[in-house]
Length: 462
Image (cartoon, rainbow, N blue to C red; front, side, top):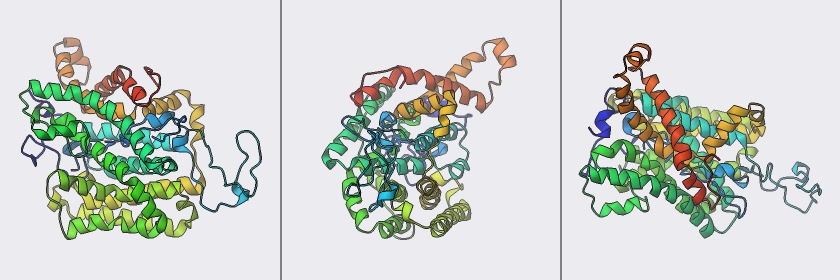
């Protein structure tokens, strides 16, 4: 039985076949893109395909899912170990009164640039957002709730966090930054991909030249229907990788006119909806996903560059709410066209809803300087957040396989009379719990690859 068919009855749906080699997630819809949007899901930073960069040398650190699961992915998260990655933004031209003593206690002189808050330390607000995004991705891929994306648009959040980290990292030479990000992203992807590719080959997959995308995922890696549940989430990795490659140019353009560029970043997705529609292939899917999350990536730039700090609350909140209203209205008003109000299936609605939601989160952080330092008082919760951030790529890549394996495992439970009588074997909540047990097993088994990619000593847990 294929992975796709095994999910029947557990909330997993089948995907269309745009490339002719097996069903795939609909690439336009937000999931994908873990989402199939298309989900997304983040892929990891890692959402962020996100790997944070180590402090020495300093390097700042996404899901992706199937259509029925929604595109909620997350970034890669070696960044969790990087203090530099989450350092707070400093508005250009900050006055001396806003500066603080350096770590050694030496007062900054008026001529010195204002130091960045929490330089060298983790920002638990961002860490907590990433952890919530990962939980939401797994939840969506288990239950397929259409409203999950409105409750918390994980992929938009993860791309915004990745944009902030990228802007920070680009204070160093662009080539070194891009090289570092790729180094942190690709080894965990290759390690995971080896198992998926071999499994598909055993199950009669005949790859063509497109297999090169399993080496560098600038396009959606191919696969067969048997393994669709695993590889469909890779849209996130592909989108994250393109944002990384484009960031040196995007940041230069953004700095010339931050607010106009930020607002104009929503124009491409509007054009794709009402004007020219990209083809339903690798090229078109990549363009659609980039257009869907471009604003989120740039709002990360805006946070890092201090642009959000200079905005007045009233206009910032009103514009954000307007984007939310438009995105929500479009999703519900066009249910007949898309067959759902799931944002992962409606790129335009996803783009505007994520833009409004993420702007509020980032503005709240910039304006009130929230850091969630209170997490330290709850040691277990704080430790969980640390693990989620240190193993974000691992969780993102392996969570779908964990959910897939939960199905045959639960089937075995039915053979034990006591389990059949006392355990809720038919409940998706039970599968959700078993999935998380398998994810927690995968973290120490495979998470060390993220440490190796980051040139750190491998650990079972970060």
